[in-house]
Amino acid sequence: MNAIPILFEDAEALVIDKPGGLPIERPRRGGTALSDQLDMLRLGFQRQPAPVHRLDADTSGCLLLARNPKALKRFAAAFEAREVEKTYLGLVTGEIAQESGTIELALSKISSAADGWRMIVARQGKPSITHWRRLTVADGLSLVKFTPVTGRTHQIRVHAQAGLGHALLGDPVYGRPDPRAGRTMLHAAELVVQRGAKPPIRAHAPLPAEFAALGFHE
Image (cartoon, rainbow, N blue to C red; front, side, top):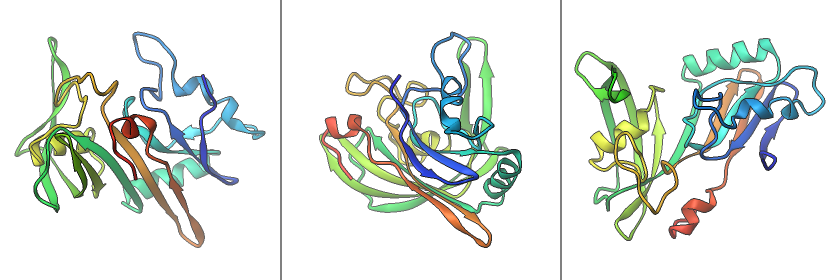
């Protein structure tokens, strides 16, 4: 496995550019995971860094790692208090006519033995909010910038399908697999984490080659 790019580094934090298709923890079916690389990501520190938040296996881009338990606790609290700014770029399977908007939906988790689990829009679910802006439209696809306010599981994936009416390209749960994409085409492009009196953590992950191969660039 190639070395994972580091986007930000200081004494208490790393932000890496997680490759699309790499799960954070080893799945039940086996295979490689980010956990295999944590020892290499110590970079001379005594402890392995610990992921602060989640990205789906398919999602590429900015992932924050804490280098010690105190930092992990503070960063987790910042996410809980919505003191973290996250920006995603996604390829949507449709030419979106509207330029921008806000999606507000209540989401709930359902599961079945046959289909596994997924998130659905449900009146009794937890509120979720995402701002979005259309960036480029070409060949039946739209590159959309998503700025989530809340951090619900699969939020952007559900909001694309239910809020915009078009699933993310390649999404096997809320859309369908697509030969043009080897994964769900969602990328965590920017991350800003406030740290009180300290300068904030700022990281930018360039758009991956899979997007460029379909003609979309930053």
